[in-house]
Image (tube, rainbow, N blue to C red; front, top):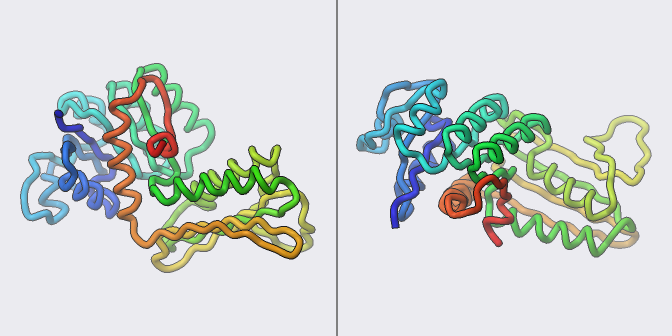
Length: 267
């Protein structure tokens, strides 16, 4: 079996370094291209202190299409920021490269543009707000609970992340809210509460930011005289890295022109 050749946007950041180390440690995968806005032209192995050169220079994302083609990259991983992903993902799709996107905070228009590029260029993509295998199970449990409990229960979602996270609420919290709303026939989302705000039939979504919290998500189904809580707590970003590499190996074998979720990867 030939190796899956993986390119990475944001290669010199903390998440990028973890992903590269995982690629190097995973059978049948290899790093084929690395992109960032810093350290252009330097060997990515040197920049990350891996103790050896990898023969993969850090490239400017302006050269994304040319580098992806020249390196014969199979799949590009992007866990950066919405503004960058919105530009880079369609370019990569245009170069015939499959996509793994974990960037959160993408607008509906940006998501639609990426999906259109995937279909138009006949590549496959996994787009997910969270690549943790545990979160996949968490969302399945949330769906089941919403389906079984129905509108007799109030729903509140609380998410907590580190103090450097830019977007709020988290993509995972929004995914959970969208799943619940669909199962319960449509719900308004209320983001925090202040002043006079009697509770209606909404889903309340609350964000906490502090310290080095990797990611906590709690969904509360609250009825009269009882409460059900479904919770996932991430202890390390390694869980996201492991899921992303799993998805990268999976997506290259899938039907092209299709956008998948992490639920599909785990099916």
